[in-house]
Image 1: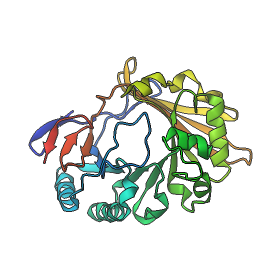
Image 2: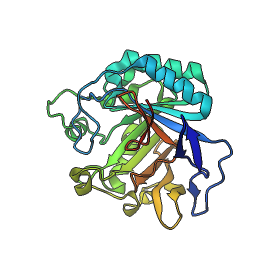
Image 3: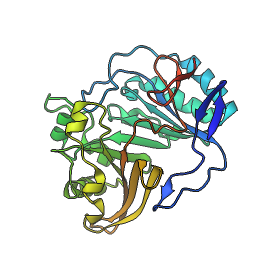
Image 4: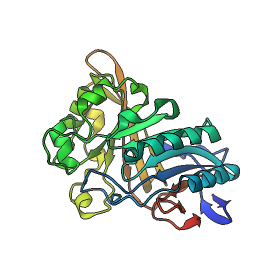
Amino acid sequence: MKYKLFGNEILIKDHHCNFNDQVGMKVNTPYVNLYVRLTDECQAKCRFCTFHGKDKGFDEYKFLYTLSRLSEQIKINKVSFTGGEPTVKIDLLNRLLEEVKSIDKNIWTVVNTNGYDFLGIKPEYTDSIALSRHHWSNPTNNEIFGLDHYGYWITDSKDILEYPHKDKLHLSCNLIKGYTDSAEKCKKFIDFFGAGGVNDFGFVSLMGNNQYSKDHFVDFSTIDLGSMPDTMKAAHYSKGSVLQPTCKCANYLTCLDDGSIVKSYARYYISRDECKGILVYDTDGKLKNGFDGEVIYE
């Protein structure tokens, strides 16, 4: 569906995701999801990532003005802070989280982080902390992050297991050939962190945005996460047509040894062009239609 924002026509979703091979339900209230790239700076050197560099500064007041104007034109469903690594600017991040909630307390706020300073994120203004953790082992996780200094972990697994606000914590694990790349390893990942009270997991296929991602790609549907012990597939979803999806995912429920139930999903963004209703406020102060899309406001 076409929708005009700041005088520019963009495409937004007119139907929700297809559900169990049935066409998704119609969207009643038009909305967008906004990603905010707070900085290009990141201390990790993940070989699958193309969004890291030097900090260029961030105009806080210009962003808040843009956000306020956007909220007057369309419902903002979710604001996700990303980077780079947004927690390297923890004070700015917390101020903006609070400001977003002051504009509309119903906006779902998310911080996408590698865990560098996730303990400093103010939980009272944050609905979800999507913490990138690609292996249960600290040394192996460091290796994936491109950090070779032994003894320093971007996020110690101990900090995750002892984090007091686990209802807000979501662990996002990339499926990478040679690392977490099978149903058996995904189950080990869930068991390790689930034993400490984490109950929300995501397993994500790499997007193929560079050669490393292409060489280490694992399609989640080929490893059958539903075959994990004590696990059932709850549902599957897709975007685009049912027969030729541009994005697909599936939800699972797993019973742990103590009888508790944890949830997980697996996702594969097949097309980088799948950006209906996704806006990006970039570090240069420009509002874009998708991560690689045209500028609609500056």
